Amino acid sequence: MLKFALEMLWTERKKAYGLIVSIVTTLSICLLFLHFIINPYLAKKVTYDDILDFSEPYCIMLMGLFILMVCVSLICYSCNYYMKLHAREIGMLKMAGFNQGKVVLYQLIQKYILSSLQYLAITNIVTR
Image 1 (spheres, helix red, strand yellow):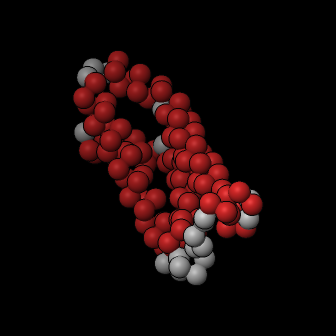
Image 2 (cartoon, helix red, strand yellow):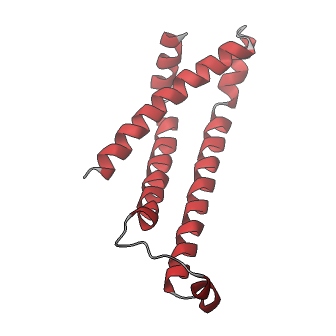
Image 3 (cartoon, rainbow, N blue to C red):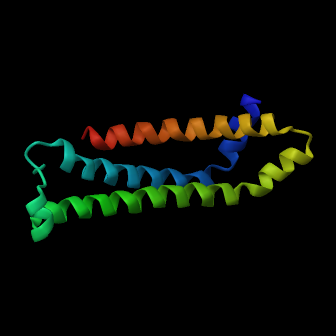
């Protein structure tokens, strides 16, 4: 099963490139905007007066939350699009006699490999 999943991932690697690039990009943007919360030099406490006055710290907080929401929705869209590309492949696996557990294991192996590649790419980007 592992060998077959890796072979299919290697032959269909062009379809996976878009998913890897979009998730790495959106997670990098998410990490960048999470630094607004973590970094003590960038983070300012938002008070109730800031909310009423719609001041700069409140606008920065809202902008960061909005961009994080957009990034999360982009990740979900990328995963759904990737699954649409592989719908035929899943159908062929079921026709070949794979039960639901084997298909899930097959997809899990491929997603784990892609996730590890994405993690390596993100750590290389963030540590620079």
